[in-house]
Every structure is written in structure tokens, then in C-alpha cells.
Image 1 (tube, one colour):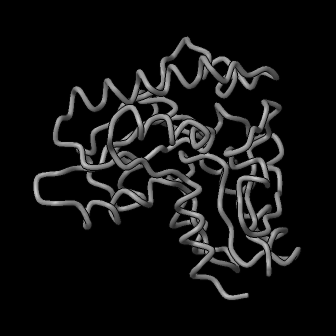
Image 2 (cartoon, helix red, strand yellow):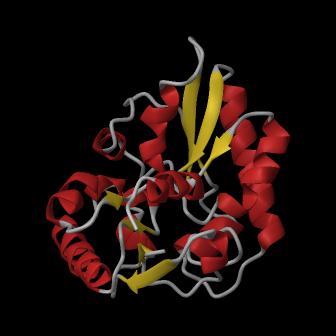
Length: 225
């Protein structure tokens, strides 16, 4: 089976099972290509350096295609902003972000129900990110706490991870979103580091929770080879 290629931010934080950067998270082969010099805060931004990020994405995508990747994904949901332009230059199909699931899921929900997003940074996730994947501009959004364990590790690019603390923060952020939006029918986890906590969030909220691993299972199933 030909591998799916994944464009990785330049990071040093732990990649536990369920994280996109851990190959054990997948039931199919994956290969990785690092975006040299493009770290978490280069991507998790309301106004990234688009030219610099675009060049890195395009160059690394070409390398993945040369290595035999059948399609390409990214390790940061904020790279949704580059979905169209990367797809236009990539020699293989592209799926940049779990945010691509938002419009798909919205079409399947009962009338009156909405898809919400839990993100690494609510302050940085803009209408432009949502528009890039065809998601409604008024999509309900909640972010992980700015000064917590999640931000320390994943935005601060630290070498340590307090898994229990990150899970608590994920549950708190999810509950806040559900309390604020009683019409939620499903939640999408924008961040590719949050899938390890998706099951706990489903149990806590009693709602369907989707993440980048769900997206990539669907994406890979639709690719040849």
C-alpha cells in the first residue's frame, strides 16, 4: 500500500499515540517530511507569513511525491488557509486540515444542529481559515487556554507533555463550547495534537467528536494504490 505523506511542522514536543506525528496513529503507511524552520507559531497565526509558508509547503510536498506518497496532509489544522493554493501546485491530492470536515458534517446533521470547532487558539482562527475550507463564518469556536499545559507544550514547542493536564483542559474547553452552544450536533478538533483526547471528550459531552485522523481515514480511502 502506498503511503500517505504528512507535512510536519518543525517541532520537538512529544508525539504520543493518537497524535498525527506518531505513525502508530494510523492503520495505513505514512511518511513524513519536515517543514524546515516553520514552527507552531508560524502556522498558528491569524496572519502568517504566507509567502514563506507557501514555499515550504510546496517544496516539501514535491519531496513527498518523489518519495512515493499517494496524497499529502499537514500536521497543523491552521494550514487550512493554504488548502487551495497548495492543491493548485501539488502533484498529489491535498488535505490540509480537519476543518475540511466542518462543511461535510454540517450537511449530515439534523435541522437546527451545528458543527462546532475546538482549536489550539481561538484568537488566531479567523474567518479566512474557515472560508478556505468552505466552513460557515459563524461556526462556533472554542480555544484551548492560552496559559495552560497545552499551550506550554504545543504552542511553546516544549519537550515535555503533561497528558493528564492537557486532557483536563480539552474537556473544560469542550464543555465551555457545549454550554455556550446548546445546538451543537458535533465537534471538530482543529488541532492535530488533540485526537488523543477525543474519546474522553465524546464521553464527557455525549456528542460526536471528529479529528484529523477521521479526515485522513476518509482521505486515504479515496486515493489509489
